Structures are given as structure tokens and as C-alpha cells.
Image (cartoon, protein in one colour):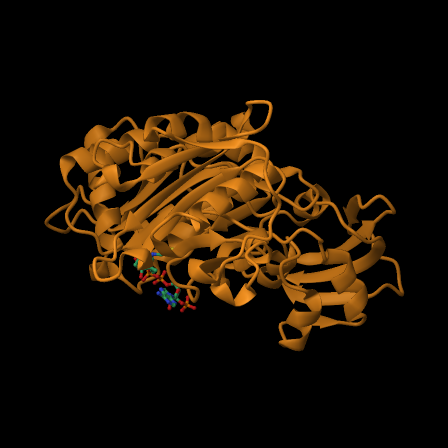
Length: 436
Ligand SMILES: CC(C)(COP(=O)(O)OP(=O)(O)OC[C@H]1O[C@@H](n2cnc3c(N)ncnc32)[C@H](O)[C@@H]1OP(=O)(O)O)[C@@H](O)C(=O)NCCC(=O)NCCS
């Protein structure tokens, strides 16, 4: 995995995309992470694409130091007045995605995708995306993944939301704790201590949760406000939970906003809760929900079936909004489908179309009694057949959406919809607890 990540990071750009852009007098190239000036320009272009102000030097330096794992592709227009400032940015790195059954699959994470407004809708994103997906595919990376600013952009490239996220607002005046009592203790810690211990806890937690990925290294300082350019880090409170044996099992970060007109109606924002055990989860949530003077707790990137909604006595104390979140795109059908486990056995033929060709073909998926799959192209007669695009297969991959729903929506055709739906279903709902 580390070797694959390194080979992906250092691979040259895709020749087909380079040539297509060169035909428009544009240059596609990789900006080396140790090219300090080049990375600053790349970041300035990326920030502008996401509507941020012109970044200060302290900010770009802090971010640059924290994205060295990322491969930074840029498109440059030498004919403009600022030839060193890219007009297209595209970051990627190979990280581990947890799949149903608890295993991990190397996946190409994509982020920081922008095209300058001066060059929009001329196919730059398409060229970067096709080229970078080809690089990942040729290296044998079986999956690509991203979180999106707009849900309309990436379906055409074969991506679909495979894990959803929930934003919850909990009226704490209605909460009566019905979750388990917990034997450990909660203590305040410094933000620096959170920064130090959270990565290991996240690694323990995310390996049990389909849809979660290894945390990009730079994220921890951003969460904890421990980056030199952090704005108002003093507002962030950090907590830890240690179990009855004194072992650290969870941490959390939150902020509060005082309501001067009505103190007991002040608000808390739970920024992050990382729990490696059910105890730690319950204890940290309970602590935040029972804070004095807090009338509402808000949290985002929760699971759609977040256990806390079943711990608050009054389900309507929580107002929940659900949104598409973790987008996947299968690049290698046999590698992806054999990496996950299945909760039912059976065989189905998948007839897959793919705009870029990577997943295209007729595949026989056979799952044995212990939930292990094999995939082949040797197709016997008489099996149920599912016809679907790679986006629909990717949507169903973690089990978040049933193939029966996608069939009802006209996105999938199946000769035996329940056979196919049963095979892909998974009892643990997928989630992703952050953006990347
Ligand atoms: C999204 C963005 C990168 C698109 O770049 P672009 O170079 O204009 O896109 P392309 O010209 O390559 O378009 C490729 C296809 O995507 C479509 N598309 C592009 N942006 C779209 C959008 N925001 N919504 C819907 N469709 C979009 C195009 O219509 C085109 O469709 P087609 O190939 O089916 O005709 C650019 O608009 C941007 O930087 N937006 C702001 C930052 C952002 O939201 N980035 C995405 C982060 S997840």
C-alpha cells in the first residue's frame, strides 16, 4: 500500500490528457511538493477556486507543509499575465477505504479540484479527471473517491455517493439520556494532546466502519486549531474519555456560542468525536448533551443511523438533514468486488458500462457461504443479470443504497432484482465522518 501510494504520487502525468491540453496551448504538469514557490501558487489558485480570499503567506506555508502526501497536478496557461499561477488544480493521493467486512482497499482520493473562472467549461476538468484516473487505473488502484462541492459534477465521470452523512441539531432541553451508563471518566485536555492522540483512535475506529478512510495528515491540525494560521483556536475545547482501566478510548472537540439574550439557550457545536469503543462514544455524547447553559447541540458528518439518535429519549429532539457525502468510483471491478465481504451468498452477472472503459464488461460475481466473493468473466447461462453503469455499481458498493431502489429509479435493470439487492446489502451502514 505504501509502495503503491508512493508510485502513484511520483507517476508522470497521463500522456493523452497532456497532449489534449497541449493542443489548446495549455500545459498539464505535476507541481513537486518541494517546489515551495510552485506549491504556493498552486494553493493560491485552488483557494480562489473555492471562493476564498487571497491567502496569507503564513496560511499557504502551513497548508503546503501538511499536503506533502498529495500529488498536485496543475494546468498552466503560458500566454496569460500570470503564467506561474495554475488555471486548473487537482490533488490526489492513495489512501485506505474501509469496505464492508472491515477490510481496506487502496483508493485514489481526489481533492482541491478547481478550474479558473477564466477557463471554465472548456473541458479542463474532464482532461484532468480522465488523465488522473488513467494514472491510478494503470498503477492498479482499484477505486477512486472524493467529497463534492456540488452533487451534479462527478456522475458523468462514473462517481456516485456511496455513503451519506447527516447533520443533526439536538434540542437538549428535550433530551433524557437513555443510552448506557459508562464506567470511565471524561476530562478536559489541551488541543495539542487531542492532536497527538486522535490519529490512533481514528485508525482504530475507522477500520470497523465501511466508508471511512485513513485521515489525510493535514486534517488533524485543522480540526484541533493547532496550525500556526488557525483562526480563533482558543474557542475549541478538547475532551478525552478514559475507560475504567484508565485506557484512553475517545476524544472530542467542541465550541460554544453564548446566547446573551437567554443564557440557557446557548449553543454547542460538536466538531469531532473520535471513539474507539461504544463506552467512549456514549460518554462523550452524553457529556456534550448535558452541558449546563447549552440548549442546542449541532454536529455534522454524522452517520445517517447515528446511535446517539437512539440514546436521547425523545427522537424528535433531533432535527436531521441527510446529504450525499462519500463518492466512490470503481476502477477495477474484480479487485473492488472481491475486497468487500457479503452478508448473503449467491451469484449474479453484472453487465457494467463505463464512460472511461475501466469497469466495462460482463462480470460474474459469486459469493460463497462465508461471504467471500470471486469475480470472473466466464459466464454460465441462466443466472440473474443486472445491467448498470459504473456509477450505480459504485453507489451500491458499500450497501448504502439498495439495488432495488436504483432499479425502481430506472438507473439499473435486473432480471431478479431481489437476488442482486440481497447480495450487495450490508448490515453496518456506511459513513464518512469528515470532508477531504
Ligand atoms: C467544477 C469545475 C472544476 C468544473 O471545471 P470545468 O473545466 O469548467 O469543467 P469541464 O469543462 O471539464 O466540464 C466537464 C463536464 O462537467 C460539467 N460541469 C462542469 N462543472 C459543473 C458543475 N459545477 N455542475 C454541473 N456540471 C458541471 C460540464 O458541463 C461538462 O459536461 P459534459 O462533459 O457532459 O458536457 C469548476 O467549475 C470549478 O472550479 N468550480 C468551483 C470549485 C469546485 O466546486 N470544485 C469542485 C470541488 S469538488
